[in-house]
Length: 411
Length: 107
Image (cartoon, rainbow over all chains, first blue to last red):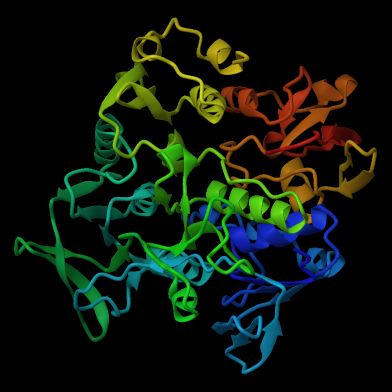
């Protein structure tokens, strides 16, 4: 499949990495990288951490300086929306009315914030945390805020809460389910994190639905819960997850089901179109082949490398091990593998010491490992799970068991 | 400004003037040096900014903290005695002249 003209829609982690990897492999064709934000591709994880906290500026957020794109002949088109894929003509239409022709098209359209269907989400002081512009706005509001309500206790909400508390703000987190990060971590890890945030002064309402965000003169001043409780707030962060950007693909007749559906090589049903990163639903070998959509830098970058390999004539099925991380105050959470659906968890290390790992099993098979302030366990976990080697629950629970040796062993 | 030289497995060299307080990883990314990936952006979470420090210069580098030591267990290229994560090599005046070798692969 010769592809002389590559068009990449979406210029975040996945889109950028396709372009960079292709040039690294010596790909000589034209590369157009189209992004709808007005800035050079930047790293998102530090937005909710060091960037929000003011520890790093935009320069250190950028994936690469501007010169990189020139030197590598990557035509970066900032601030431009793609409005349609014209599959028959092998081209995309831009909001400017222009067209870009492609031999191969990579959809790296990412995801957008889920906006809850409640009144008041447009009030001044209601913030989100996904893009640079949103983070800049959040920072401005944080500077003048005293009482903050965070809706949603996922990674983003908790990372923000930790920073806001460190800045002395009152923080109240409203969570619909009964625990923090419930979609991605085991019960003991959830409880540990909730306790740590509480100890830092964060308040929680679990099983609580925000029904209305209220304010006056266009500015937020409270959040009303289904219980009738009113939480005073001069800043509200809405962090209730994301929706994959699949509309462009769907409008072009490609299958979209919780993401743009791709095969094990990350190709859509159209052999000239791939989809990668947060927007793609792929058959995941680390989830028994189930259609899986992940929101992670690792996933975005490894998807991108897989597609770049295919374009330069080295196709292979995508098989990288998923891994994730979060930093919340002094707590470092690292997850290797996908633990969804685990029916058994085993603790390694001492929960009370604040440094432990949770090994998650299903029907006796190790699915994934959560490590809290135990980075060595995480490093070993990635090796273990990447190679498919098993550690039994009793081995995992035994702190004397040599996890390193097990990870390094040749199978 | 302290100068740091990066040498890849093809013996391609690049020397950068790095402001004190910037990490060897950050400088590499800012200048588009290919052999350093830095997937996590410098949080010591991913082990994709692995470098080998020239053996006789190890003493010039800051002491290794437990997190870095732990994450070096997970590098894609083999860990050696002179392995470091470049996000943890924050440049100081004493590091002028440092030479680091980027590994075969980071992922």
